[in-house]
Length: 388
Image 1: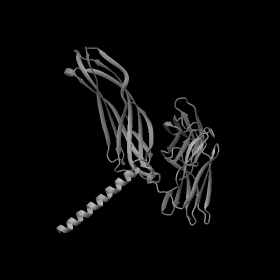
Image 2: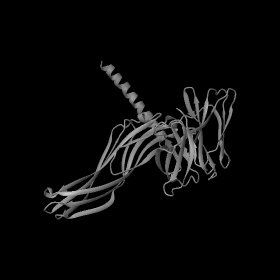
Image 3: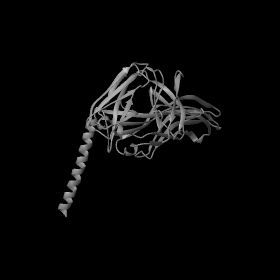
Image 4: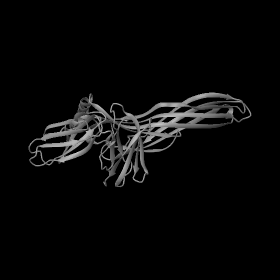
């Protein structure tokens, strides 16, 4: 019995060590090739509230997910008035606190953080009061939950949902229980974000491709050409485009044809600057990718807001015209054909937006409007939604 237990223990140790070696190898492979993708939204409120948030899950086609970071960066303005309503003098100690709670079925555990600061001590005679106008109570205070284990609920299609519950509160300690009246105002602005850290080396490169090129043909168009080895049948070549070389969207496809080895595809992105292209090669039982190709188009080409895919199903991508090296801050509204606002989101320091539909949209025509938050200028374009 002792020999059998020893053998089982050795086998378990070997399995554990093998897993650790594989994990270490993957980490070493990614050490110098990590990328990140962030989805965020801006929340404003009176210092408290309950917010339901939804972001896209991580697609395994985009790379090997290494870790996930959820953050709420908080700015709070707080003002108050305090009055002694007793018949004797008193000293009042004032503390202001903030609790930020983030819950989600996808999180390994609930995130709950409390911070509290003493604002001051005030000695007041009967009838005296002190009034303090709004001041920065918290400035870019970061609540961060980051983890590399338990990321499986963030993988796949669909969305990951969060409930964010902040509250700003007050504690007053009065000497000898001296009575008082108190009034406070608070306002908060919170940037809530979900960041995926991933390894681009986790993408499987397609075999059977003998050539793949992407070339600018004129100031506004790109031509893609690729060749496949003989016998590479039953394939679908999905053409994917990206603004940053990380977040790709499918813009078209070509099905393989028996006996045909050369394929081409023309694209007109609608804006200048750098663009990145790749092929997503789908065969029965396998998804693989071509190398990524970079193309530089003359800036200002097209001059119009670009929306794709169009028709859409569950999301759209937007590209603002103009200088890709001068990202801006934007408010993006999606409106139904009757003018009804469907959803709104703010984006910062970017001219490219991924917009996931927060609810299933009925098939039909919609309008998307991007307005610059500082200048108020913007553009409107239409797109259609197909049935799922």
